[in-house]
Length: 258
Picture 1 (tube, rainbow, N blue to C red):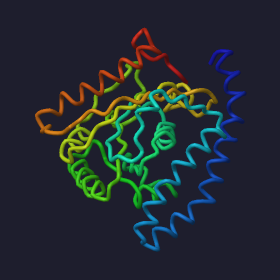
Picture 2 (picture 1 turned 120 degrees about the vertical axis):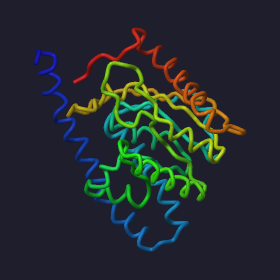
Picture 3 (picture 1 turned 90 degrees about the horizontal axis):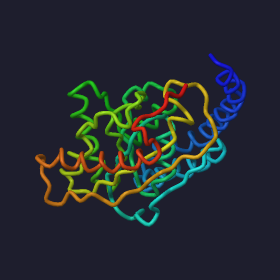
């Protein structure tokens, strides 16, 4: 560990503890309310409860010193049902997506979260988990998402499946999000997150304050598309994200962040 890394550890360790304390406080205050909403079973209240994470994410990111610069605000349509896809480098991405998307939106997350305290309960009751390396579980998650889309919800999905910890700008994109959009004939909205991997690396323990850029893109229509168009739709989303990322990483790769 060099001098710079030691300095960062000293500076950002107490900051990370501060951020974690705020996160736990927010969970402590709002979790009982969310449980109550689930127990009551009122579908209108459950739908409204989905907006709580949106405002909590906005609040937490500000408290954590994370500033969002949203580009393409004119492309945000809060009254439409959409399938959102983004690149994925950090656990911060879930908060970024939640803070940025104003729609009634559900999330697809890794199944392991179901075993986590508190967050596992919320995943089970409000969102959808998936075991990426299990074909049967992927099929199950697709069925669950299709069912939840009938309620009018949008979905946020990271096609890379897990955080990108390589130097490549993007990992392989799974096809699930694009198949889901085709099946329901819903537009796809690519979002590019820039900077989350630097502020909170996937394998790092320190959360740093700073700026994250969120780039919105025009909707990619799926009207009339079939399964044979999956690859073309996937390539459109990949191309748009890569174009954004190359503006910030002209060498075509990420620098290693610890």
